[in-house]
Image 1 (cartoon, helix red, strand yellow):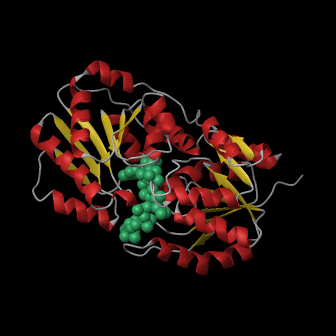
Image 2 (tube, helix red, strand yellow):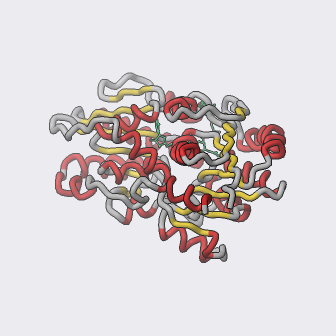
Image 3 (spheres, protein in one colour):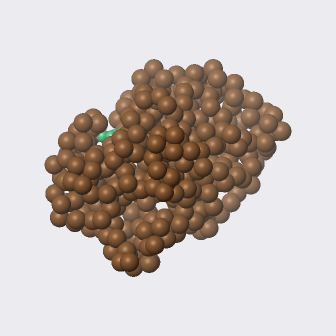
Length: 362
Ligand code: UD1
Ligand code: UDP
């Protein structure tokens, strides 16, 4: 049988990272593919495309400063639909749970084009956390014809939702493929004992306002109370994150280093050089166990429970006091720290892209 024509649609930093290994593998195997970069993110996404040498066939350039979810969807309905009609793929491939992914899946469904969902089956069972991603995932699951899940737990979830088992493939997470490829080229640095290094990222929409401010106040107290702590924080470009940051950090702190978002290679390097990660990111919860870095998850719910179950991650919510208590515990109790800081692979071995392309080539 001829292999199908695939159209990859992606718009944000994590979608670019997680689809890149798949696009590289599909090109290597000479599949008929096209790529569409919606530009939901710009500066934060472009370096990844450059790193993996991906030149999109279509670039939609939709990002607006402080865009609403409906701004993104509206722009996609206008600009993406004609591309789908022009490309006429056998499958539209979308990744994860962003507004780009959910809108692309909906437009494809409306045009009776099959959808393949990469990183399917993640659920918190709370539509408001993460918001709007939990809704987006469920919408994509309804539209999708093929579901590629990262873990057995995600597969079981889709089975419970009534999706036929022959439409679900457990393949691991392609984010680990990207990490494996980049990790091979970066250097490891062993833990120092004079400092306790923390890498921070915060960007979740459902945390904007009081919750993000509470977390930032916790980080400020940690810096002020403990000179041994050294924080590096690539600040997300969302203006809401920066507004909360400016509200809390009115003075410079010597042990707090604020930087622009790092390109993916440098970010992996920064993860390898840190002792602890404090984040509300989804992808970083998956990467940290692979690198053996303990991660504190600043959210009320997570869909990546495998990271918690394997012992690499702890859920700390958005309360400043809990953040301070947990960081102090990990910086002081080496035995507790070491239990978390083990390399683990709950999201696969980093060869998921090959498994997915094999299925399209059958
Ligand atoms: C989006 C995704 C979220 C994902 C996150 C990854 C949705 C609903 N949210 O959230 O699932 O976890 O990306 O980071 O799809 N901005 C820039 N330059 C950039 C990127 C963003 O200036 O390269 C600023 C813009 O002002 C933009 C704002 O950030 O309007 C928000 O971007 P958006 O993609 O809407 O939301 P995120 O919160 O980044
Ligand atoms: N990342 C990056 N530079 C940074 C921060 C994160 O390249 O400064 C990478 C990180 O390694 C992970 C991805 O971005 O692969 C996670 O993206 P983000 O946290 O924005 O989104 P989420 O995963 O929460 O959807």
